[in-house]
Length: 349
Image (cartoon, rainbow, N blue to C red; front, side, top):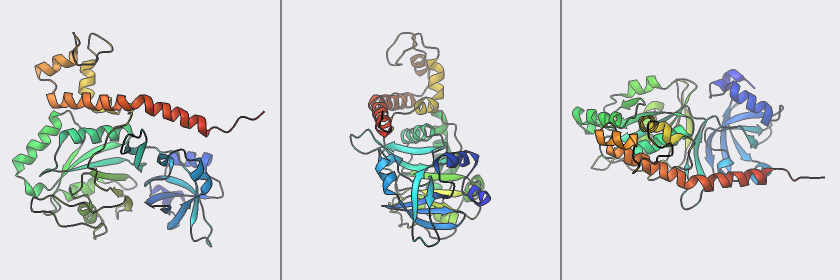
């Protein structure tokens, strides 16, 4: 393996250690660029090539979430004579972006893996929604990545309106970086390009039509991602149909995503608390250790709400996401326990 070339794709000592444990020394590793049904597009020091998942690994995967997704590093075997490589395993994920699967299932759906920064894109013209933004932040922090908010279509609003939107974000206790730009005037594109570091992976998420694909085309310098004209209201139309990792000229990597109309958080491991640090700080002063912050006497959170230190909508969304997470938590962790038991080799005497 040529580590220098792999490092340009996000490889580091952490993945090197995983590969020693999980991969055949005679094999290779590759990063998943795209997933097309039963085929993967991989990239490594040898370039891009197609691969398939081995039947054994497919059989051993207890859920679809354990199959390779965009951004994953995989163990692969391929000779020069092979048309396809064969994926034998997947390396542990350093970070992940996931959401609850659609319907009543307690499964989660993988969006992307090994991401450094999630770029949460909202249009400041019609799509701006602090509650949805907080939901994205919870999902991002639960997976271990950092976040950046990107407000697009600034050419459609007055500067005072844009400043008010940023103020709303800050008043909700959101302290992540906020960038603003227009795909039409290109204002803000220089700042965005400067923020994208070589060797790091950036995943762009947001609703359909907020300009993600147009934005990535601008970063790439050509129309790589399909786009459609915006409507008369400035609302874009959904075009991205698959996730794909793209290496930019400066060495940074970006992942475009189909728009998400609705998503629910699963059982988070501190993601809600991390995103509501201001409320958690007040909660540490509550009279009761198991305070629900709804009607208990001596609740410091309710006192801060009454005094205006905590915004009402911020508080309501905190309770909603916390209930949603706790609702799935018992069944989700029971399923994980069952999966671990099933994956153990049979006991022999």
